[in-house]
Length: 78
Image (cartoon, rainbow, N blue to C red; front, side):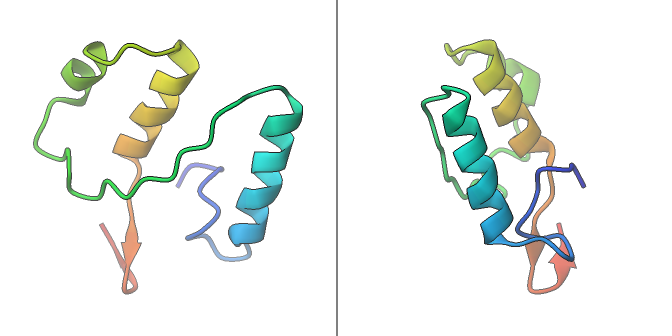
């Protein structure tokens, strides 16, 4: 799992995610997104999908990471 996936890792919690948000805010970033996209885009070519999105590169990179990460649902990693 990627290092910034706090909610599903042993020893990490929502408080860690909140701390990360405060850190990002203090570095002048101005966005927060909470989305449940499990299985919404698993059959679509992610690179093609992202090529159609118009936004800053760092936001595209974050969206790509979300599309690639797994989800822990009822103790089952998907």
